[in-house]
Amino acid sequence: MRIMRWLVVLGLVGAGGLYVLARPAPLAAAAVADLTGDAARGEQVFWASGCASCHAAEKAEGEAMLVLSGGQRFPSDFGTFIAPNISQDPEHGIGNWTMLDLANAITRGVSPEGEHYYPALPYASYAKMEMQDVADLYAFLKTLPADATPSQPHELGFPFSRRETIGVWKLMFLSKDWALPGNLTPTAARGRYIAEAMAHCGECHTPRNMLGGLDTSLWLGGAPNPSGEGRIPNITPAKLGWTAADIVQYLTTGFTPDYDSVGGHMVHVVENMARLPESDRQAVAEYLLAVPDVQ
Amino acid sequence: MRVLLMIAAASAVLGSVAVAEEEDPFADAVEMRHGLMLQMATDLGKVGAMAKEETPYDAAVASKAAANIAAIASVLSMDQFPAGSEYQKATDSFALPAIWTAQDDFLQKIADLNSASGAFQTAAGTDLESLKAGMAGLGGACAACHKAYRQPEE
Image (tube, rainbow over all chains, first blue to last red; front, side):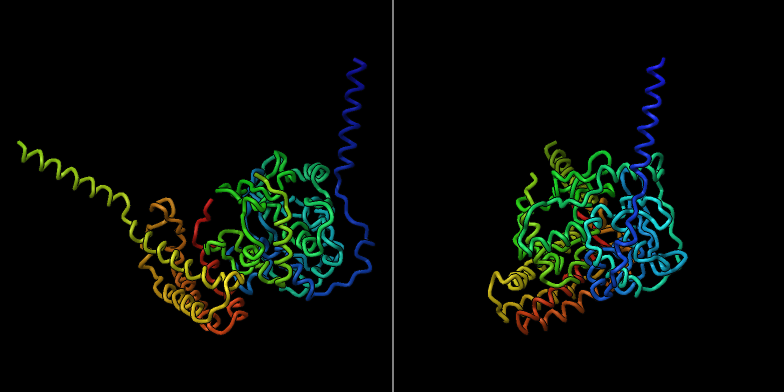
């Protein structure tokens, strides 16, 4: 009986400890205090990071890609996530966010109200971003239009509807370590930064475990399509079988080496990569060719 | 008796042909558009290899390939896309039903491809740098339509 009582106490202490550990962990204000953003550089960060691909309205093209009114739906094993409005509208968007708010959102997955965001926002990738890039992105976002479309709530079942569960997820899977560790050439290191910190390639091309964390031992080894149809391909060197020139041409034009053209959500990625300097696409190619093969 | 048997056999053969045609009334349309895309890919392969600097730039070859691409673009119309020749209804079709529900936009995408392939024809015959730059615009027109109207393959 006495043992039972101790077990209950220990359990409560453990749960309490986990509760404390899994609380949202925002950055210190000093993280961005001395930074000034450059909107022109921020535009490169914006495209490299694929913000508009998810936060622009469904089927937006051209200039409409800069109206970040949200609304696109992303089905997953945990329910359907609906991209929120991140336009400059002060009420429905993020128009009154500070630079620190943006840094917390995208590198820590924490809202200005101190709540966890779901990792459908790929902060597990953005956590590796340089704070100067966040500051530049902030300056660019400030130049974009406001839109008053209200954000829609995600459609999630219990227990995933409880944001506390995200804190535990972060403890397990939020890491600043590179998936491809070690010293790389300057070009490949730039490619790693683009692919892993900004373009978040691994979020779709790497399989996830039961808890929704990326299995980095199978980095870029292909995964089921979260929308339920088909598979996202294995893009490790042997399976892909493309040269650096093939990869650069694909990321510039959308043409595969067989001159089929890119389709589906990857069209967004190509459109984004095509806006970067050629040297960045070459960097991504060099990085991809350095990733270990997954069979 | 023998005559009757022959008639029976002949009508069985004719019947099976009729059934086969009924099963896939869109075979010709799907074959036609896939053939056009395959020829497009063949011509893109010539200019693409130059863009990748795998083969030397040749203005005459590039111009001819670009002219072919523009010609194929001009052939594309609803003729190759009869209503119903869609993904999971016609064999080998990856055409999404939105082609027919948003037909004006689909036709606009074809018009955009015609503009892009026209511009590429000029670029491809100019020099290698123009050809390289022109590939992105052309690829963008291909991808815009495939994003909206083609079911992604496995």
